[in-house]
Length: 180
Length: 97
Image (tube, rainbow over all chains, first blue to last red; front, side, top):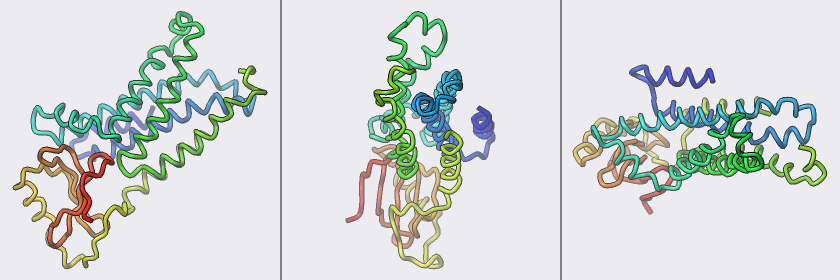
């Protein structure tokens, strides 16, 4: 989370480039989210990595935390663009462009798994808990679309999609499916 | 794996601002460009809020709020100030044919 702390600190300095900070926070969110969704397939490929799966919750929550910082910076940027009091109107004006809508939806899909990332929720939800956590996958797909479309991020999104998406196929390997 | 991802993200983040985006190209010698401040003033007169203006691909690229539209990224010819391209969050609203 240190880079995010740095970003927040930058965001409070008066002459900061908020646009760049917003993009960087989004990239961090994407990196953490991609890391969270590749951990299970990677652990299937290399059993030794299964020992690291306890980190998955922290990684997922880091992705959600970074996304919230990203949202906060986005709203601040929009506040800078808007007339006084007109921030929400400006946010609404672009909320349904594909580039922004995908971002909102990705954040919305991350909310249930983030809220359920604790032992109490795990016990309460039982078998449904896994289904809730799997919302991270469509969230990652939407976040990638958001990244690809919103502002010149196509190549980076494709690179992450190829790496993280390719590894998702491992989830369907029948031989290892029952192992985890 | 995570290190590779992060390295990729970090490299792209650091290198991205240095590259031209290739969305628009204007073949005008730098010394022939009219001052970018003039373009900003003209846009403000038209009701724009200009947040940032810079050179990209030889054109003037402006980030701001276009009246009746919202936050956009727009390209203008650096001599005639003709509007060449307008995009709202990746959605192309106008492109000179």
